[in-house]
Each structure stands twice: as C-alpha cells, then as structure tokens.
Length: 97
Image 1 (cartoon, one colour):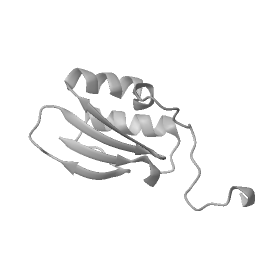
Image 2 (image 1 turned 90 degrees about the vertical axis):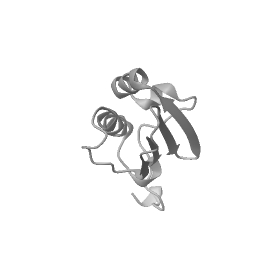
Image 3 (image 1 turned 180 degrees about the horizontal axis):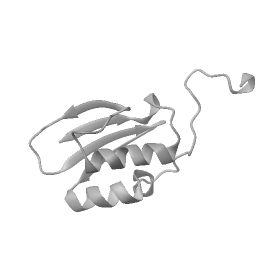
C-alpha cells in the first residue's frame, strides 16, 4: 500500500497527528484519514508513506514490525528534522490572533 499524507492540510497538534497516523497503521481500512491525499493499494507488502510536513517531504517504507513500532512511538521520532508541536494555520496573521 502507498499513502500520501500532507500534514499541512490539518492544523491538529503533533500529538494528535501521531495518534491519527498510529490508528491508521493499526486499522488501515477503518479509520478516518484527515490529511491523506492518496491511498493506493499497490499490492506490495511494504507500506510506503510519502509525508509532507511544512517544507519537509520524506518517504518511509515500513514492514509489519516497523508499522507497529511507528504506531506506538509516533512518526516524529523517526524523521531527521524538528517537527513543531503546533502549526500556524495557512494564511493566518499571527499578530491579529
């Protein structure tokens, strides 16, 4: 399976985002997918996740054990950039908030 996620589409904080992806990893066909842009059954055993977060784009290829690990630990632990806990909404003027 291949999925394309765009964290920029959802303004939920990081803890919610990690739990959301974790639930998908446990129950791929029975969970709401808020930031998913594509979900393709490519017939592969590995799950390929194309993830965009801010200006960063990463690709994770996960086997069954890695899926369970990522579901429990959260995806931010496995990337090589600092993932902000909160994000500003697109187009929002922070000074007027």
